[in-house]
Length: 242
Image 1 (cartoon, helix red, strand yellow):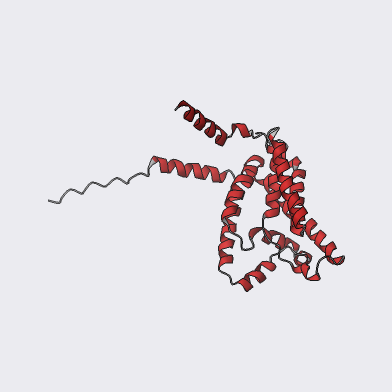
Image 2 (image 1 turned 180 degrees about the vertical axis):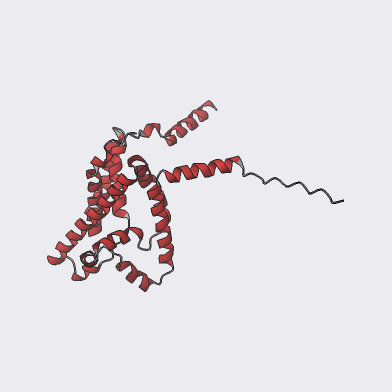
């Protein structure tokens, strides 16, 4: 007689807390797909840069730079390409910055409106800052070689979105927030006085000018009702009880 087949072992199910964590993570990421896809692209390009020799890296990035020479020859390509490279900077700080600023803005505005704001600030600040550099070169206040300066990165779009979030915050906190943003970029311009400092402040002002993109967007953020503040209040009350 043939022996009866051994009973199939049940496939263990993943722990419930792991499932909940994965579902929560996926839900969070898909609410701001543009932000997280952009972060992923920046991760890939940053890894690529770290595998380049210094000489090759400089030449490679210069070909994707929004300098005067490249803007005059191939503007569309470099305006897009420059937004996906960090000039050798670390990728990790941008995870924090994108989570704090870009992700909330995209969830609030919707992906397409957020993309429009990003494009306006990135393109507008690039042309205005490079225009200032062009004038400085022709007035002899900057060397002629500055037409080939290295200018890649995502900071103009970030500055613009930071300013645009002013409309997301409830009174009176929004005014303190706006003062901090303008003071940050304004003081950098006063002390640095470079064309990139001009670009950052310009991007912030362009972000404020994107106010029409906020029409129909509800859900003003009240800082005093945020989860972090609620958690701190609960912690303080528990400490007081003990």
